[in-house]
Image: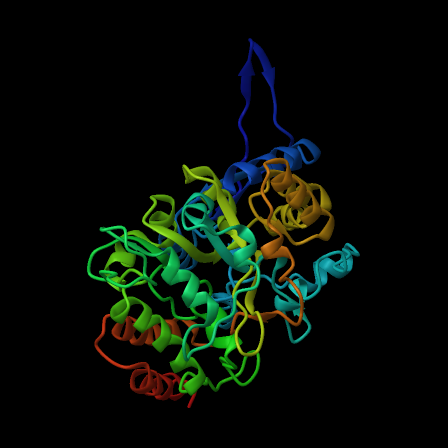
Length: 434
């Protein structure tokens, strides 16, 4: 996006001029809940930097990445964009990200104020490719009203366990909360799995890396995605993964305790839950506000069930990145610095839409939720080194995504067994790196 020199303007009949070097920079993101909050940051930034204005564009997840990729090719990409670790290796290989290392050193910008691990995620071979933005974990989201109807309380969800053999107390709870159209529960004699009114557990279609749908099960069962960060060997053929996916397949296709892939694909976990068709889902902390705003019942959050190797959640952190082709890199850097500052992150924290990258702003987010009577500790208490694992980062990420998604769709549609489909997918994936 080129520099836009502001023209003379007439205000109330008086000639006014913009600053001599006025520039407008573009900032793209995909989360509609965050866009208004970041507009507050943009207003505060321009108040301090009157020669720079920020134009924010928000688009849905799929369109966002399509538009961004098209922009890189056409030369019309945004000056600054929100980056995700799933795209990071691809963008690095294609040279579309600006290295921030020298600017950080020149300005003596303190990178130590972020939560541990966030800045490091966006640093490769000593070069910094993104400014930490926020972080997320996964927890159980539930309908407190339907929980009460089943004679259960929040305390009953605090210490759930799971194993791939019988599903543990996690499956027992899902069964109890599932109700057919005759009022029979999933753990009662006569339950009609073909005519379910409310599912105990709802899930979106299984994504390639299973951030919210299956990773908490597989990793707690001993599964490991890849040999190392930026590695070239995947372990999708691990029986530990097949066991976890097989459990989900059975839960849906054999036991009727979870919607089928077709039903999930039409609506998704959030829509199924907020519409009253489900009682529990596993979802990310970035969705807290969406559930609270859209549900007509009391929403609660509970810790993930603990598997054979304990309770595990994917830990992900977004970043703000400067496009390497931006004609406004100096102004873009000023904006990116502000985005990572305590001032902007505190604005975001007070809004309670996500957990920002700075600890003082996280505290503000927790307080914002507490003021609404919402306990989000199920997400925050899990943010430890012992309980979290990173999103798997490798090159060829989009191709891996496509192979995995095809394999998981096949399994959840009942067209193949995990123990056969996943090893075949693993061969195809690892062939990409040979």
